[in-house]
Image (cartoon, rainbow, N blue to C red; front, side):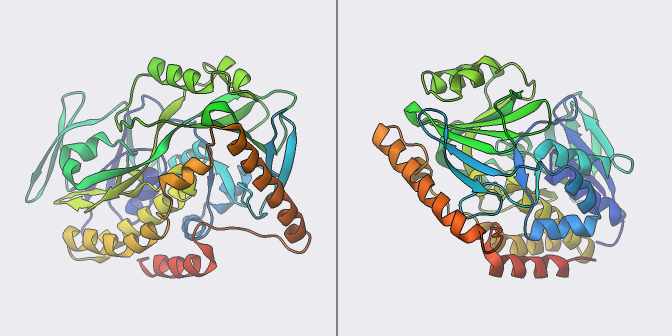
Length: 403
């Protein structure tokens, strides 16, 4: 498709602005809509290793991202008293901290700043109706206005509302058995430049990570049998979290006391999105809307970056949008599938409800500590999402789709 196209992207987190960058670079006219009324700055640490880092380098954004590195030194596992029982430095086996890490909001801001002058961003805007035709798509927005586009792309989240308008029957969810909530709380004197993990009573897991001088990010995960991909209001979400952390111990009391500190509060089911197809007509999915691997894998951001790059490249290279969508899916599916090995049973191991189960998990942490000290004294170990061999292969084919 060598002619310039008018393309609508729904979603302005990571995948949307990254895709906007490449489409604009290839000469397309890009509109990005976002349901939030203002740019969202929240979110947890994200890991940009392997192919995702290759894409960032090609975008020329590496220095800006490095300047926003969280500087997290590693992770501490806390015992029942709240004191550290194991410490795993950055890059060690079992550590959550990689050498190339940034807050989701900071990464989104960098991508937004790189595209806002050349792309039309519209906040507080959603799609309420789509009508596909032979030569384009007629889109009706929540303000009642209608506009024509050549292609429409959903770069939304797990519960994508736009996807439901076109492809509801083509998507299923693999619920991992836990809900996750993330937000910021005020930094306190006892906070360090180390992430801290505490397994609480009732199966909850609390992760506190350093952000900047004033804030600490919180990720709480907890088991829940009921799954609903639809979002509930903020009051109900916070009640669900309060119930999960009631009497959990550790930092739970501090977390609950600061639930209203961050307006960008999130809570939802931890799920993987599995699509039988990723496109229909002139509509296509990318990022979490197409293939969310869940936050537990650490692969959501690399998938979003690589997927955006490949999709834009194939739209530029292939003769039709149909051929481009097919090629994009063919290239991306092996990459997506390689990170979808996580199962609910594995997740349950990290959320023990009994005192015995919590004790076993803490013993494992101590074992990892001993291993980390032996390994880290000899060399720095950086664990990328897919392992050395897969990372190399992915980076090779990702570069091959450049135009």
